[in-house]
Image 1 (cartoon, rainbow, N blue to C red):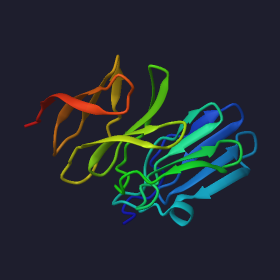
Image 2 (cartoon, rainbow, N blue to C red):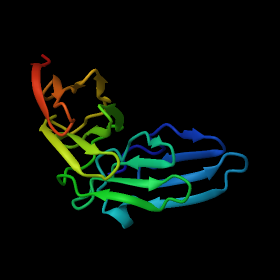
Image 3 (tube, one colour):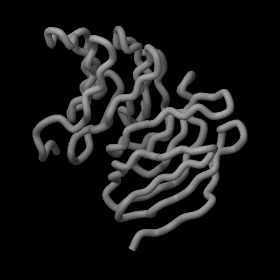
Image 4 (cartoon, helix red, strand yellow):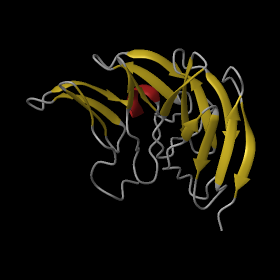
Length: 188
């Protein structure tokens, strides 16, 4: 259902390139000077992205020449693309959740880079170098809308949502390969 027309994400600009994800799951790299398309990747056709109620939405994330995004497909949860070409670096099966409007964050924890995002029914941590799903934590919302970006400080990860599980504080293990609940605050 594409009930609301228009873009849903903030354009991401690096040097002379603009990156954007459409509500239909197309990731586009454009030349800032003339608007020409450098490359495009259709997450629905190429990675099985499943559209969600108000269109696929997230702000794209880059680290150097790597661009990360969350198709939320049955077989492909997240992908890492070369930001210069759109070519696949890795894809992660994850746990099969749909995307849920959350923009991923990249955390650096004890020598490891970890992508964290909230998907349809879980908070998920992925190894940013390989795409390996490191851990999931069950996290529900009545409408599977998780538009709030997680916050990470000193090994602690805070996530919050409305109409569901409320706020939760997770603590990462020493190597970042797991996360456990420290406390929870349900919203009224």
